[in-house]
Amino acid sequence: RSRRSRPPLIPTSLPLSPTQGKNNNKPVKRPSAPVDAEVEEGEKPFHSSVFEQERLNSLINAPERQTWDEFKETLRKKGEMDGDETRLQEEAQRRFRKELDEARAARMGDGKGDSSAK
Image (cartoon, rainbow, N blue to C red; front, side, top):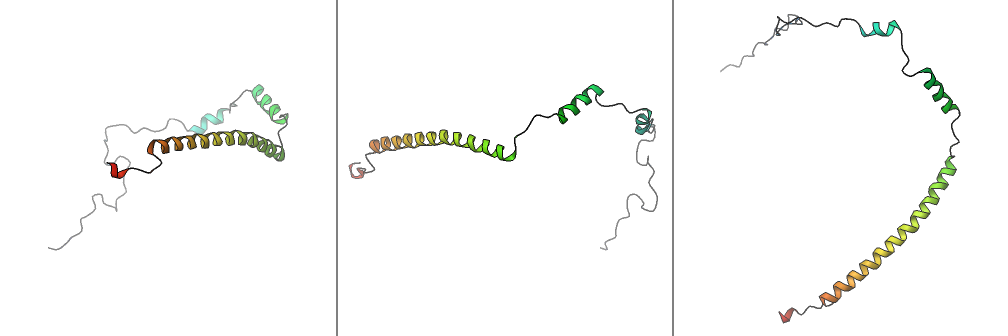
């Protein structure tokens, strides 16, 4: 058997028309007016002038913000307070775990099982 290459389904030498392979009975939809035409008529502001003025005033007269050093100090103080709570919780967990271990050891007989008694 000799292998022949198949011819392409659509000839590549011919340019494709926009309607080739489609239902030709339907009308072609085209944009009615360019989008730029609407903008050229007159740009409308997104916000009112009152809003824009208030926004500018709020940006210009912004309240004082902390400096980086003040912010770091605030975080350090907050961390110290959180650290105290965390230490207390960890200590309570250690005590509770120790009580559980002691109770388990008492029930199990300290791991010295009487395997010969079975």
